[in-house]
Image 1 (cartoon, rainbow, N blue to C red):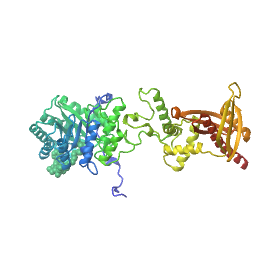
Image 2: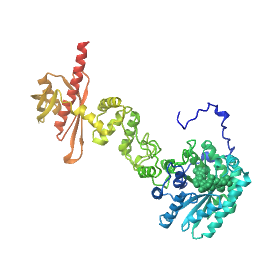
Image 3: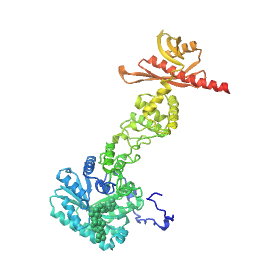
Image 4: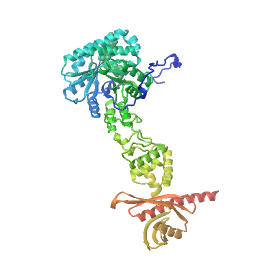
Length: 576
Ligand SMILES: CC(=O)SCCNC(=O)CCNC(=O)[C@H](O)C(C)(C)COP(=O)(O)OP(=O)(O)OC[C@H]1O[C@@H](n2cnc3c(N)ncnc32)[C@H](O)[C@@H]1OP(=O)(O)O
Ligand SMILES: CC(C)C(=O)C(=O)O
Ligand SMILES: [Mg+2]
């Protein structure tokens, strides 16, 4: 047993946990609301995210994160808890003194409702053009009883004192444009009437107006219930905060139940104006709500989120560098694997969807299995399809086409996919595009035996009937042979000569070709499907600058493969 595990006897959860009570808001309106505009976004990466890191960010990482958040387009950024940590204090001073805060960006700092900490917070902010001072105290019944040992009035006193101190100090630093924010921390575990009462008491101290609003932030400090309950709590508060028109109602969901994104979305439907969270959901325990997911969920509904994730890989790298934590490969939108399909039917549908898209590139996005266009995030289609033993013809042919310009005919796709699948099964791993090309070359270009094509001369009479004559040089088991035949095309003429001189019964079932590359540099790619008599047909392929050479080589490639099959079948027949 690891040191993180204990060996408590199993108990029925009902003896230890209670279901979260419902809010009883029978006239809720949020279920019918559609989100059609983004909230005010506030990043708390540098505070809530940072306080949860194994190794909190130093100056270099903080500066990198701050710049990254500004580049994404955040206009409100909680930069730390300067009264608690010298690093946060120094960082706050640095970005103010070095003029690193753009004019349209407000920095926000967190502080407990304690006089000495509030004073230090204001010192940290001297010289800031605009700042949000965010104070909090815990309000839940559990925290009141266990941590503070106080009744509701005592807790309200802490908040009111803090609010007064903030107001007084703000007046002492008039060169900064101040915005005040209050969080009844552990809101989700707080009786709603008490949460409204304490918030309204703070608002009564601050006296916000519609022109100069205060922020009331309602944190799911711990996510304790399903998101519909959080939404009911928010709608209830939305109706009970006064004066509501002077308040920016803010959400701060954590992700303990894995529902923070849903909670934030339903909370906005329930009346919230603003959301605090972090990039990719870093934060205490299971994290804060992920702002990337929230923003791109809006994008996927046709609502511009006002945040720029057009270079999402850079954002991932920046977050990984600053947090020293990886972004999961399956993380929504940002994860390495989220625009990748391994399974055959998905690959096939994506392949068809992308082709369909080409015929109406400006229409509504409708590619199966891809909720948004990877290009919106600066990601490429090349990464969409990957191949392992779960893959089918769709993925394999997509890679051959996009990477190497080979458009296999449909029956050949099926034939070659089996070869790839066998290799993937044997190796038990993903195959790269280069490995797939190599398998293709081995299967179709390196057939080598018994026949090899050397050269040809073709002529045509130009009237009806057997107008093509082909003379060719081949080797059969290494021995050079000349042949001559006639037919209604160069391939037919070549096969006629081959059948005559080798005594074979080769039948051509299909022939396709396409150009690869452009202009004088273009090559011809030929695909031939051939069989021996009524035996199984197989494909061959060849590439050559000369289209007839490509066709005849492709025929030889198909015949070699067909002969191998034919010999196998003959051998089996003899031994049976
Ligand atoms: C949900 C959240 O994320 S909240 C933010 C959490 N982040 C942090 O705490 C990181 C930074 N914090 C710290 O470094 C420290 O807590 C400091 C420097 C701010 C304060 O340190 P200390 O005073 O030594 O300790 P501590 O935080 O435990 O404070 C305990 C006292 O403050 C009181 N207190 C705690 N929170 C608050 C608050 N929000 N407002 C007012 N008083 C508070 C407690 O009741 C306790 O009082 P007591 O000493 O009379 O029992
Ligand atoms: C300080 C508050 C807003 C917080 O981080 C929380 O409650 O999760
Ligand atoms: Mg938090």
